[in-house]
Length: 184
Image 1: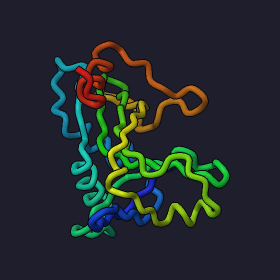
Image 2 (image 1 turned 90 degrees about the vertical axis):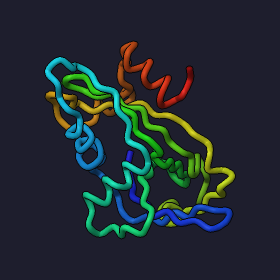
Image 3 (image 1 turned 30 degrees about the vertical axis):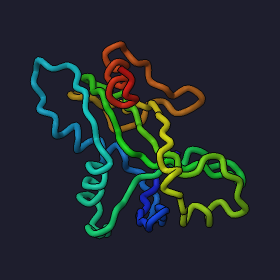
Image 4 (image 1 turned 120 degrees about the vertical axis):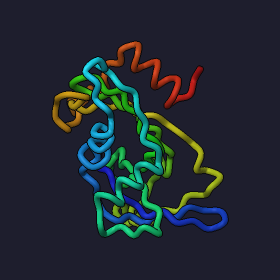
């Protein structure tokens, strides 16, 4: 599942997304700085946190000197990169994490840009996207995990394959339901 950096501009009725490059360092450049900020108290063995779209763009500026401060950049996930003549692209709006000592389940709040759209030239269509502002409100959620937590682990994604969802213990599930999905 590739991640891309897009520059996002807007006019009165649309958002225009221009693809910049493939971004393969989400755990290292976006999640690790958040883990570094957490004040590790020896009595704490779990910690809920959030990265907003603003936080994500600020981390992008800190890690990539080619990005211009006066522009808006977002991370977009390509959920079906190998599907012939179909694109499914989702902007990461917020990242919610629940870090334990040696792993971190994540809830990604995604805004649908295009979902299962048939196109003739997949790569050309991914270069520039136009999304009506009225359609830019559809949200979906994805659960993933990284093998790093508060005290140990590596910045690798959890097992990739036909089954890659994290097991969510009641405390992390409760946090994601209340804060990411916003069900009370």
